Length: 292
DNA sequence: AGTTGTGTTGAAGA
DNA sequence: ATCTTCAACACAAC
Image 1 (cartoon, helix red, strand yellow):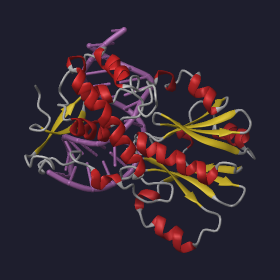
Image 2 (cartoon, helix red, strand yellow):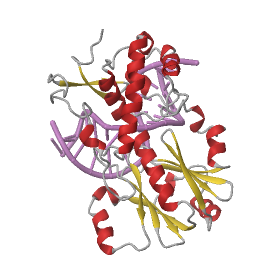
Image 3 (cartoon, chains in turn orange, green, purple):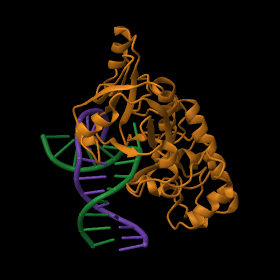
Image 4 (cartoon, helix red, strand yellow):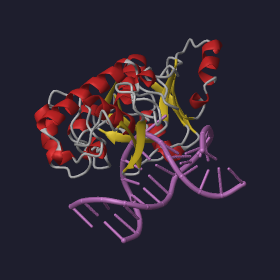
């Protein structure tokens, strides 16, 4: 489930924990997760290279190295990074391993100070690439494998209500799948799309281009509010997402509608519905999020 | 016990 | 072009 708040949390934590550290070696039991080059080639190119910084773009993670190379990681559905400090007590490691979602380790990055960066991924959907150039250059001038089509960053200054209006006017889809379209806005996934629309009081079935200026304004406020709060609480862990210390994020208890089918709406007390939109579950309150 | 659903997204098919 | 369906994979719930 890593969406923008989860990936942002990982980027911030890794920035604190591994930037300015040097990669000694890597190990993988599933090199298929690497795209575009072999495990051997990746090993050669990152050997003894320092990690300068870690950035996020949409749901993509970028680890910039000192040699004009950047490790790109997409966590997809079930990937997450765990950081093990060098002076790791056995007790602490045991505590991390007690959680089975921390035990699907398919990549180990050994750093020269003895610490480790692990990639755990139950379903093995996560993908790794090695890109040429610095992270900022890649963001500005993205390669054409997928990152090239990313839309605006919802927490950036350019993402104004006017900008959102412009984006939504062009789309004929319902607002809920439109919010999840990475080519328009980068980083919103299935959980936060439902939560945002509940906070905005907008029906998920309403067509994007039929929204009033007032509704767009409400959605804009809700996007910023929900994403910022989720980042503050280090993300949502409804099942397998974990932070780099192996622990769950804190936004799970803040969820108003996601996964709440048949439960009472926190605002009006009526029942929460689940419907399907573009093959994904949408959760909403039909009373607080009127279709009209 | 087989079927269905899960936070993502790219590729293939229509 | 643009839309829908499927596949990558593992597991839980029904």
